[in-house]
Image (cartoon, rainbow, N blue to C red; front, side, top):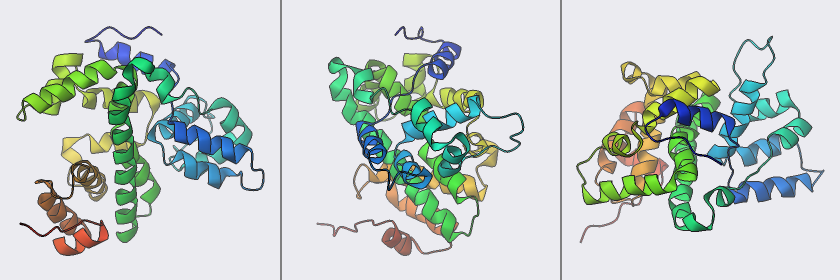
Length: 277
């Protein structure tokens, strides 16, 4: 598998569009178990497995958009609906849980698997927060919000799969210099930011419109955009521990979104208020 030349955003977009998206080993295991259980295998049970894995979700969504019927007027973002549109058999055959992330990384990059798994877990946590808050706000587009939060960092996850050494360089740069911005570190290594890659993939793959809206600074005050961004921020910061310095600001932002007090937010998100020494 020949990787794109560095500093070529268009080549990376083309490569990631044509290549098979890998999936998490646990996802492959769960799908295999479902296939062996005719009693419980249906669109809903398969969707439940898919929604836990941002890579598998992106894979399914990309396939559907590449093969959608001309008569399909509206984009479908609810995973169960995608599976029903394609058909259960087609989904299992054409959007199979292969290759595995571990196979793509290879034995030489198993240490980087930890970072990839942390990022996918963070995405899953963010999607759960965003879904919960959308329901609290009586937003009927809660599934689009969930999927948008789940895929918010899909470019980062994909680059951990296909460019793990470069991703590690970026992480080390930021460890050595806490003041360097993520976009600057990414541009110095790749020649473009992961945000730029994310936007180009969202356009090319016809990912949920909300995903592109989230990346538009002029839309930052929209309730759904705030919901997704705050969920992503909380998942990212809490991954460092519930004593992360950025969390109080997150609680304040979420409190304004949900019309609650910051202490109430801490309760609903499961924050641990540790006593100070």
